[in-house]
Amino acid sequence: MPRAGLDVDAVTRAAAELIDEQGLAALTMTALAERVGVRPPSLYKHVPGGLVELTHRVATLAAQELAELFRGTRSDQGGAPALTDVAGRFRRYVVNHPGRYAATAAAEPADADDPLAIALRDSLDALGEVFARYGLPQQEHVHAIRMLRSVLHGFAVLDAARGFRIDVDVDASVAWSLEVMDAGLRAGRHSP
Image (cartoon, rainbow, N blue to C red):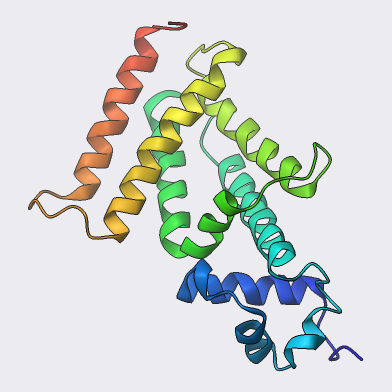
């Protein structure tokens, strides 16, 4: 019989907290069972798909959280303020939830109706609103989103690995990158 108060959402949240603290590789059924106070076989009552299902659920949670964060962006102002705002939100999320963020790259949606696919689309739509304010055609939003994510992902990964050893503030480098991105988007160069 499952422990009272323990359901799939509680197990997912516990897994998310575990990997945020210890990394995605630390997610095991044994470690999670210890965290929630049950024996490992009991977890399969909540997540019959084991680690694959757990990773998928955490990735879905992370994508939903990111979509919510991005929806709160100051996209109504457009331009540099919106770009800076969304970048700051993204960076803070990756710093505060590194395991959840890693899970988003480790899980694949099963199909278009998968909750992970829906949450990822929601987050992309929210980011698309930022780029729509630049007058960027809808079909080019994906390029702008990939550019922004690549820059911010690169900064996050290198910063976490202490890859920036030059005595120059990383935040200043991020700001400079966003200014260059903003200038390029305002210049209106679209479609290669």
